[in-house]
Length: 487
Image: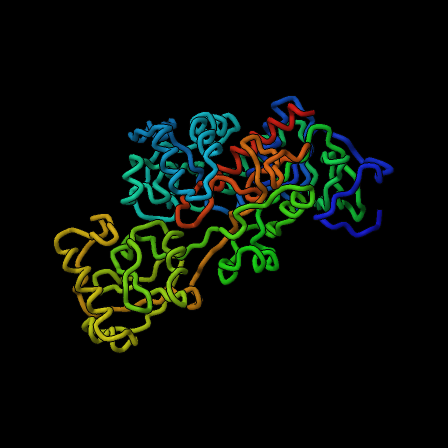
């Protein structure tokens, strides 16, 4: 078996002379999706083997801040004094997911969100019943509950009552993802789930139109693994595959790839080779951070025409999404001496110009005469009345900008500022994680979860932190459960 394998071309089972091993369910990838799929398949009575390309568990989940988007009245929400309903959560996520939303997945996720929280606790994940009320990209200490998206936004409030839904395992600041994965890994290590590291799955094995196993490179050998119930692809997205980014999601190409080295799109290519449809491939998370702290949310974003285009207290991926829609992708922020203290934590935005008046700032920065000045006059006139009729910034961050000197900060993507990105496109799956072909029919024996699929999050404009890990772990569980029943 020294031949070269193409992930897009499955191997016929008839060509396999010897199976190296057989099991009920093979899970490809040991991140949040893979761990959850393996556990649920195990609880369903299946023999499970995890094949992980790296030398340890974690995937992109371990590299993330670890927030999990859950609601509908979780114990942590209740303990912190918040009321939430399934209906409000479903309405919010439906709006956040946008025109490409998968309503069946959203409904299932929201209706079972409290159960999903309970499942995490059953796996040993500890949550701290403490709410963080500040403006941050994550809870900065050990708090386990926070707002993490646009729940308080003007449009969002029209469809759903705001509630904090980002749940982080009890861990310091950005250690939530690594803590979560350490806990799930320990739980798996206490079962008879077989975990094989340094195992690169090369392609799938098919028997007719059914997926029955994988070809895997281990210890310098290529080995055939057979799966009686199914193969679950939990291999991550394709942000690390620059060729795929150029082809499918060129909007993301100038950002900083955010993910694990395994996010090369191999799982998506394997699924496509087996007949699966890939959808939403042009979409992804892209962000630019101007908070923490919330002081910079009091500034004013403008484009190169000197026009405002967004409410500055929105979630950071919404800001980046609309920023990239501006002409030549130029994005600036006007602040005064009352706002500017030090650069935001994640981005030291360069100061383009400083002026004692808006007229001076406008002229020296090269804006057309009267453009920036009129924008700032309109903003300040309404801010003085506690209003923002154009973009509906929350009054908490609305203040007159009138303390010179004024500064213009460069938040453009070509300025070298941090624009992290990862992909939202992948295999089309149903609620149970079964991979679907272009006509909506199931590819027998093949399942997928996490960023290998197009799940709950579909656009940066509506993203909320925690949606990816919530999606990956929940639908990973359902895929594991379905594959176990199919054995």
